[in-house]
Amino acid sequence: MSCDECVRALSEGDRERARKHAQNCPACAALMAELPPAAPSPAVQERLAKAITRDLAPVRPLPGNRVLTAALVGMLALAIGAGVWVAGSEGHDGLNWMDRVLLYVSLAIAVLGLSASLPQHVVPGARRSHGAWLALAALAGFALTVAVRFPNLTVDQWLMVGLGCFGFGSVWGLATALAIWWVLRRGVVRGPLTGALLGLLGAIAGLVGLTIHCPVQGLSHVMVWHLAALALPTLAGAALGVYLRRYGFSATSTSD
Amino acid sequence: MRAYQGGNADAAEALLDHLTPGLYRFFLAQASTRAQADDLLQETWLRLHRVRHTHRPGEPVLPWVYAIARHVRVDAYRRYARRARREVAVEHLPEPVAPPPRNERELALQPCLERLPESQREVVTMLKFTGMSVEEVARAMGTTAGAVKQKAHRAYLSLRQCLEAGA
Image (cartoon, rainbow over all chains, first blue to last red; front, top):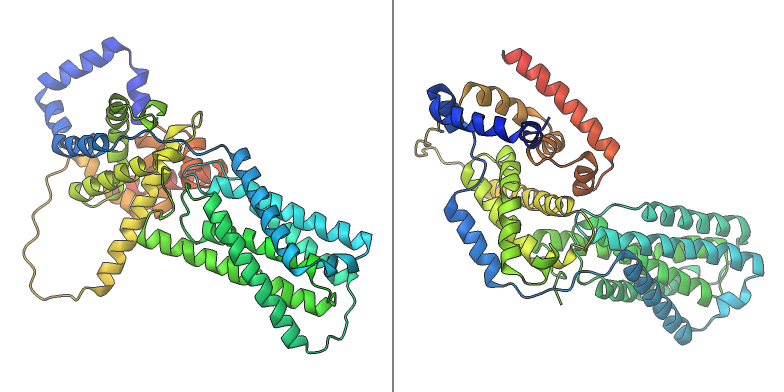
């Protein structure tokens, strides 16, 4: 039983009798005096009350999970659409319908899983979802699809072409991650895990963009360079989380 | 909580009065001195106040409060560890002030509590000193109810063995 449960188990009469006894019995009074204090000193409490009531502007609570998830999915759709509008969709044109279904469904599951999970990571004490694990499983499904269905083509200047995709996908992912941070700016980004998930979601947008845009559909090219583009935004997000944990509880957490 | 978010000073003070004893006991069970517990309590309330908008109406308050309290405690521990790495030991230190006398039961329990791994000590403190349920403690710690029950079970076994050995 906890202390509160013990107190609640007693009737009001018993509690009153116990209180009076503790006051009059020297042994019990001495024991009570040596017990750890149940509350801080009045000076500390007064200081706290002043600090809190001095700045008591009304604040708008964070939107619910569904609203934030929808906002994240909308932001990702915008980021992907903007990138494809700039870079083109030769990759999509080169895929057959089965490849499109398998690849896009796994990427959609990854996006939805992380978009549903992240809003809970930025609220202290929120119930955790398994969306992040679903997203990782979906990415594994994407990799499996590529491994099974893409031919191992010989690509001229494999390294240079690959670095181009890696750079383009990473920048796309980083830019999207920044936009995601803006959507979640009123939450608490605390620690490398939350930061990494935020970065990974941005990186997945970059991967979607590369899948739609990149006409080089060789197994080694996609498996190495497209998937490698997930790394930089994820690591950047993790570094951000470490920074915020160390230097500020949440630099993004505002009541605006 | 909603009134507090709306800027109601009475609601803020009522929340302060209601939550502070539990928070204080939580920190006292983990901190070395009353002064440290006071500091952790103040920092926790300042953070709670700053991120009060992150509590959503309809959600339980205690997991939100204690998740933030845990972050404060972990951050303080990390700051202390970084400072200790930079400090240089000196030969002569002033004599420390003798701690206040304690009753026998407290003398027996406190060392046993201190010997527990940090996560088990946290679980026991939250379950027994603050009156939170297993589900609430799981949310505050960002883990599952099963993991909390397992930690609590191991903590109680260790405490029992420790107290029996000391008796």
